[in-house]
Length: 61
Image (tube, rainbow, N blue to C red; front, side):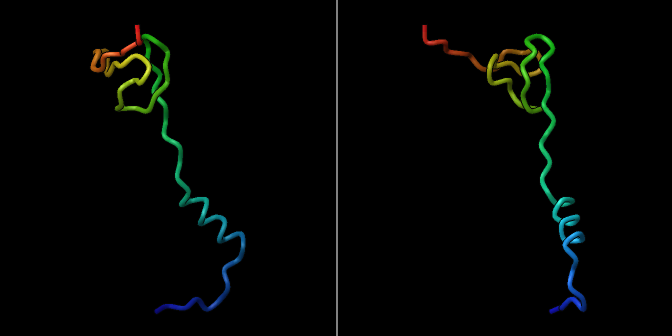
C-alpha cells in the first residue's frame, strides 16, 4: 500500500475537499406558473411536466 512521503498541507487538503464537494443542482423555472423545481422532474405544485398535466392535484375539497 502506498504511503505518502510528505505530509499534505491544510491548504492542499481543503482544495481537494472543495473540488470533491457536491454541487447543488440547477432549478428549472416553469414559464407558466413561475414555480422552481429540479429539471426533468414533475412540478410538485402544479403536477405538470413539459407543459402537460401528469399528476392530478387533490385539493381536499
